[in-house]
Amino acid sequence: MRYAHQYVKSAVALLQTYNGSVPLAAFLKQYFAQHKKFGSKDRKYISRLCYYYFRLGHAARMLSAEDAIRLAVYCCNDTSSEWAELYNESWLGHWPELLQQRLDYATSLYPSFRREDIFPFHQALSAEVNATLFSVSHLVQPDLFLRIRPGKARLLQAALTSSGVPFTVLSETALALPNGTNLEGIVETDREGVVQDYSSQRVGALLELVQEEWNTRSTARTAAPITVWDCCAASGGKSILAKDILGNIRLTVSDLRTSMLHNLEQRLHRAGINTGKMFRADLTVPDQVPSEQFNLIICDAPCSGSGTWGRTPEQLYYFEEKQVDAFQQLQQKITSNILAAVKPGGYLLYITCSVFARENEEMVKFIQAGSDLQLVQQQLIKGYTQKADTMFAALLRRPA
Image 1: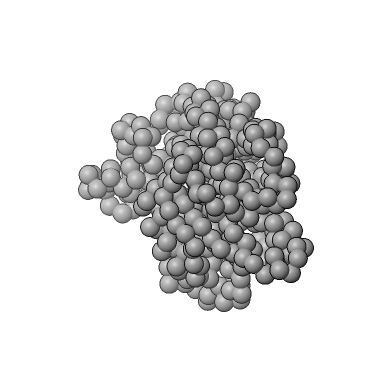
Image 2: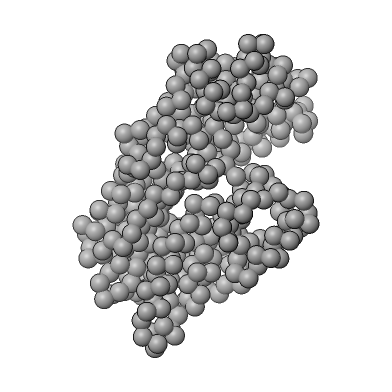
């Protein structure tokens, strides 16, 4: 690449002006709008270098920005074809395809660089997380995932194939595509397929448990819709998932952000889903919880997002472990307030995209200690071995 060294210098200058207060993607857009000397190719490569830098997480902190970028490019790429200009023959001769080997060589050059330090909060992790594998996973950009909606598999796969879009079939309903794939004009998103991380899709296994139990009830009750409240609905991915798995539901959605509810309304319309009720609510305030009770409450709780930092590595770089306590306190307030809205015999599905035990297993214990809800099943969904997010989900049931 002709301008590789200049791209590194430009990335270093950019990073010196960034403090993590806004998402990196938004900052890059603003930065390049103010620095119009950069062409489209320049913007692409400089942006990529910034993301590479943050993929080193906290392991980048002991290196100069230029050294960290060069090391990150080496670790994050299985070929030197684009960036060979940055390296001498020794580096190029140690550029194996296997990430493990590249990491070994990087450590030999920079003894202060430890792969474990990419994500250094090992003691706070949920017990099932492999700390080293999880740390290293941040060097690999996650895939884009599609969830196929009921009856749309043949249509959707045919559309991708005819358009030359590569994909891998992960299950009957899940496809993996290269990150950055443009689906516009190929797939009718939300109607045919939902852009949804693979781990988020796998939360559906707990919804299937609800469906199985509901189907064993009397004919009269089975004929009635399942009342579902998606209480922290955000973009609505779990609402659409619940509709597709549970079928006959009466859906209520809420979120703290009015703008998010507006977008959600449009998305559910595209998906062909009617909502019985949609409202803004701050669920840390008890009197904003509806008096109605529900067969199922989905609480995709506000959290650190630590299981998704492979997509937003700048958040890992700037994160401090003390922030976990604030998220846990928020989750405790929300869950304490919504528990009364679970019907007898009903369910709470508690979800986070976190890898921290305080937001996951400890929260399940907190919910059980403060209510009569009983744990049906909980799982840490390990996306870090599948180029996906890592999530936690727990299904609890109130005795009938």
